[in-house]
Image 1 (cartoon, helix red, strand yellow):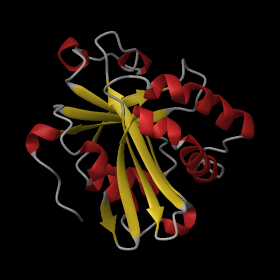
Image 2 (image 1 turned 90 degrees about the vertical axis):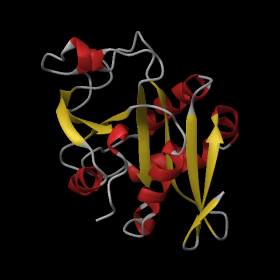
Image 3 (image 1 turned 90 degrees about the horizontal axis):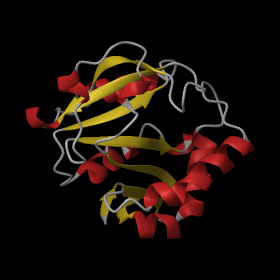
Length: 192
C-alpha cells in the first residue's frame, strides 16, 4: 500500500477487487454520473455484472484509493489484451497489423480510471495510474477516453499518452471515444 497525501492506494489482484466491488461501484457511479458520461443506474449495474468476469482474468490488476477514514475515493483497473482482443476492431479507421498485433502481454488495457469529484485535482488519479502500472511488464498501455472529458484527456497527454484513433466502445453503442496509447519503452513521462 502506498500513500498519496491523506490517501492510501492499495494495489489488488482480481480476487481482492471482487471483494471490494462495492467500493469500485460507488466510485464508478459517482465519477461517471455527470457529463459527458451520464451513466444511469442500469448502466452501473451492467458494468458491475461484468466486473467479476473481468476480474477473473489471472492478469487483472486494480488499484483502490481510500481516504484516511477508509472512504473510497478513486479506482483504476485493467488487464493485458489477449491475442484475440476486439479492442482494435472498434477503431473507426484502419489499424496497421504491426500496431494491432497482441500476444497477451504486449498491451495493457486500462479499462477504468476514476476519482470522485471532491478528490479530483489532488494527484489521486496519477497515483492510481502509477500503482496500477507498477511492474506490469507490458510494452504499452491502451485506453479509451471521452473527448469531452478535457481534464482526463489533458492528464493522459501529460503522462505521455498520444491519440492513435477513435472508437465506439462496447460494440458501437457508446459515444465516440479517443483511443490513446502510452509507449512504456520510452520511459515514464515527467509530471507536468
